Image (cartoon, rainbow, N blue to C red; front, top):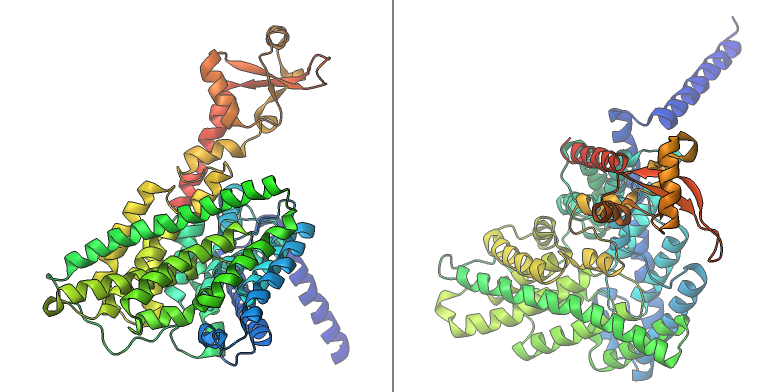
Length: 560
């Protein structure tokens, strides 16, 4: 046989084999080894996207503010003309308003809460069109002075990428959620050079379980994201602490207990301040009949006015956070900066400008801890370590309370600073802050956001699973009913006792409990002057069986 003919035959066999493999992948889902390779690919892609997003922010900030080092933007902004500091956020707000007005139905920026919703209710999928608009809006916000963080948009961007892959391979719910976790872990790891915290963030915050089957691929993706970060920035931490921090053990630990409670209250004030400002902004917008597209610009005007006097609120705020962690703030500055930062964050989110809550919570926590540490070490100088240790513990305590994620936040604080010697102090503060905050809000900032949209995930799957089932998916059609049941349905319709096919089990099961009927007619409404048309019946037993199967599947996924 001629060599060229043999090569062609081998090539046809190889392409046919690849085609059969791709068909099996789409029809049956990936096997374990295949899934690990997919996780690696998603990790590389999500990590690269997070890196590019960070570079894009730095590039636009440099162009607009004229600084050579965006990490020193707050100091550089003090040298700029006041009108420039004022106008940049206003211009950014106008652009954000236009983007959200034309490309989203509600003008709301998508972020981490929407990814959590996608994991719980939509088999690991998130919106695409609104997501792309949110990424652009967050990029403009963070580059033009918005007081938020970059982790929210990169998490949603990574979720969009995993959703595309899930749709491509027709992934089921478990596979889709695992792919989502892989993408989120890689994005967080690439953003903060924190592979351990990135993996645990995906499990603890987004998937909200620690299933063993998801652990290996998520770790693979998280490691890939970290490699992307280190190829660009090297093996360096985000913050550098001065020397070695030490704790005067036993004598000083009660102070960290108190710090944890203080940080929990600060976190609650921050979260409730954001929600209060959002409600106030909505009332003012309606009262003034302001178009949605002007809301971010109004917030930009307020932020610009604040930035003239307090430029530390601009952007992510790593410079001020570093000053707190290195002890380069006095007590008055730490207290005032904390208050102003909380106000700026509330204005940013109330103005629907975009960005994440994690980086602002790190800054607020570091400032709170620094203020507390200066007071504590001033009162008991002989029994205290460095005040910067309190800043480190406070940074973790406020962030953990806001995210509702004590494990991943504790680890990300260690990875951001490279200081593993003060674990006890940070853990003590984090544990108390999260315990206190969880009693005063719905577990976390993200879950409270969802509760405000009537998406109740905080109580667990036994609560939200009922909303996933439509009556149309569980009902028996009219032709499957016995004559006796069909006659009973007709009588119940005359008594206005019926449900529609679009209703969910969350609204229907309480009706069964209230009436005691074994079934309810399912109808299609024809209008106010016409009788509903019967489509079938929903049996109480069928609804309970569907709910039980969903609970069993969820338990199996979370414990596999």
